[in-house]
Amino acid sequence: MKCVSYNIQYGIGLDFQYDLGRIIDAISGADVICLQEVTRNNPGNGGHDMVAAIKDALPQYFTVYGPNFEANMGSRVEHGKAETITFQFGNMILSRSPILMSRNLLLPRTRTFHYASFQRGALEALIETPIGHIRFYSTHLDHRSPDERLAQIRFLKDRVFNYPAEGGGLTGLAEYGLPEPPYPEEFILMGDFNMLPETSEHAALCGRPDTVFGYTLNACHAVDAALHLNAVQHHPVTWVDPHDPKDATRMKRLDYVFTSATLADRLKSYRVDRQAVGSDHLPVWVELG
Image 1 (cartoon, helix red, strand yellow):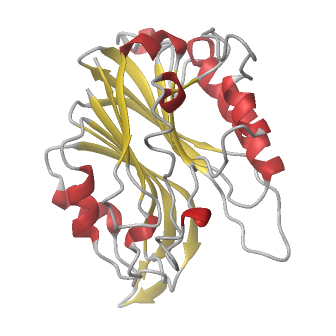
Image 2 (cartoon, rainbow, N blue to C red; image 1 turned 135 degrees about the vertical axis):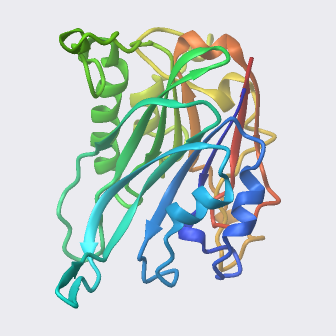
């Protein structure tokens, strides 16, 4: 099973041009796709309906979209009919298999005064995959404040790890004569976490490595796929500065794939597509078997 996460920066590439086609090319072949910064009516990219365009370009996939907010962008009344036009910004998940259930988790945030800040989220999708039922999360955390990211990670970690007890978006279907959905422990948490390795945010999610034994698999922490597969030295970068894409001092590892400890032994490979130019971020691929 091949999975890819890609912050597509609402379609704006390293050349500062909108081109959805090269994004579609970069994610082709995946079984599950997690996208971040997918927008509708965004003034930053000419107002494209990216959700509709992605669905049209990949009709073989089942999809779910979770806007983290909607802001009025010229809603009006025409010929006696109200026309709602909103700027939407959020995450998207595409799957070759049907999406059994989904919900959009809105993450904690704090009002800011001197710079723009917006609601972040993690889109959850329960999918029956070739290796069993797995919960996928397309995730996007705050890009400025470590404190805010830490609060978001703690909230998200509670939802992810308590899923079997909380039941996700819907429980008690026996009332309607329907079978209960599965509540798997297994999860894959993907996306743009806007954090560097070896930070308090990363430690809150994965724990801290022992000086002798390194990271220990346990039921309370997520597994960083790149670290588990010893792939960071070969794929250390997931973001490049669009103003100087070749400046190595500006390159960062901001995008991650985390799994439950129960999936760690199924991780087969991890790679970052350094050839992609459709965004300032790079697609991150993992394969499980």
